[in-house]
Image 1 (cartoon, rainbow, N blue to C red):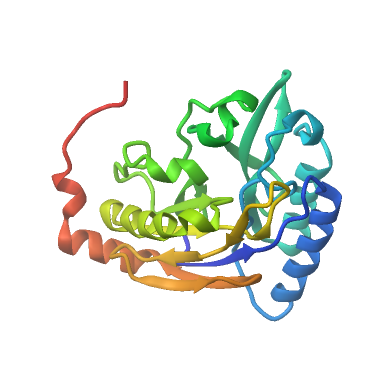
Image 2: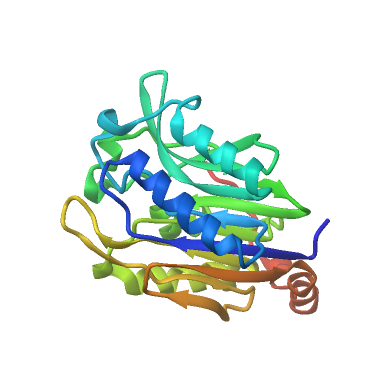
Length: 259
């Protein structure tokens, strides 16, 4: 079990519907930063290989195809965990899938529960149904994707996670909500929260200003940026447990189950 978890938040401009180009750019950026800075976990944005496209059939890959294999290779070579979401075709259904790849090359995944109806994501992608918690170096990590951030019941911490990660393509016009909700999820769940967004313009002309950030269990911001860069945030599990034990807010939650 590790008390400290060092995370690398990769805030990047994405090449529209061009997985190979994005993989090359990400690998160069990651290797450059990790040559000077150690990290346990690298976090990429939502649909990091394509941008937030609704043309799923044109860009979808299988679990044995290039992008998943690239994540596995990079994780093994750099001895890191790496995560982010991409478009996956499985049994002729398309998923916005959060992949968490361990340093050994094995993985777990979470399929986005809440499809963004405003953009028609529900017409192109199949929503996930299972809540997933990943164990890594003694940390319990809760993977989430973009629109999931707006639904606090789904994100509710029943003392089963230490860190929630939200990967996103969250546009500039609603960026205030992004920052406010990340902070709120940290405070109400007494957990670390990391949000990794993109910058630049997508293929539909929507601008993104990033605002990738990390928050501690009291809602204090640990890092923040609006430019293309990799941010480093170091988390302490013992500090989080001390706060939870001292304040005890999670023990006073109402009990209910999702229908």
